[in-house]
Length: 142
Image (cartoon, rainbow, N blue to C red; front, side):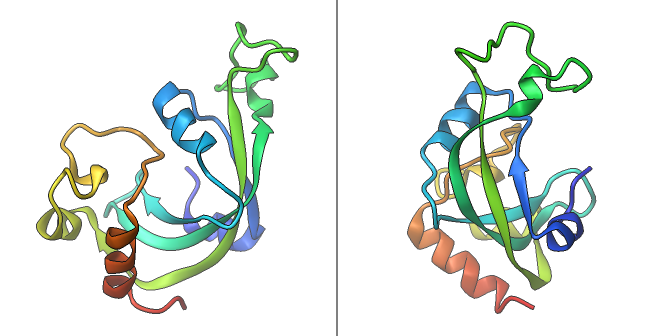
């Protein structure tokens, strides 16, 4: 499980292993300089804990060609790769986590997709006005 501590230590990472077409398409719409919230989704409590920046886009996800990877896709070919990734750079950690419960109290599913019940996508767009509101709620980076 990859957490904010890992990204802080490594400073940059490839966001690889995305194997959902909708999430992949959201990733393809990212641009260099876009900011992204780091959301802890595999540990309790769930919530936003940090901020990242997209530093490279349009990269081929190398894990799709690696037979030893759990993200290996035997149908994907080097001459026509199915899966992309971006490089992310650590921007900082917020003083406290904004939990999924807090997000559900503050936003409706049509405002912030992560609060929609049953949502399992690892990449979701956030409206600019909502992103500004989230940044106010989260406070300064540590």
